[in-house]
Image (tube, rainbow, N blue to C red; front, side, top):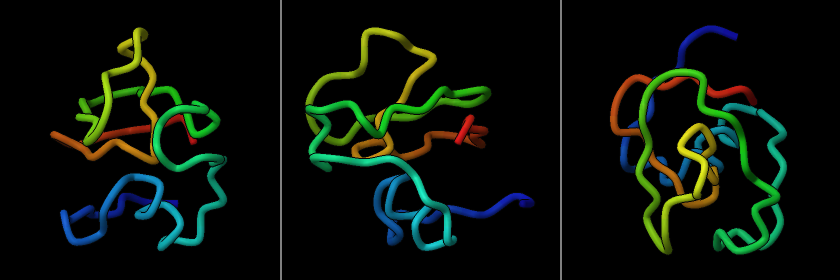
Length: 74
């Protein structure tokens, strides 16, 4: 799959991925179960609610939005 452009209207990375037809893991959708965790290969994200994961190479897609161009291992 080629690059896709995210906009704030598309919500979190989980919602954005699902809108593209990707099947991403998810559970609670509030960032507590961490089942939506994916590795960040390049770029930076911010988490909308709660705290950032301890590992900066991981993002919780149900809470994360991109801060710059982003590549995920999803």
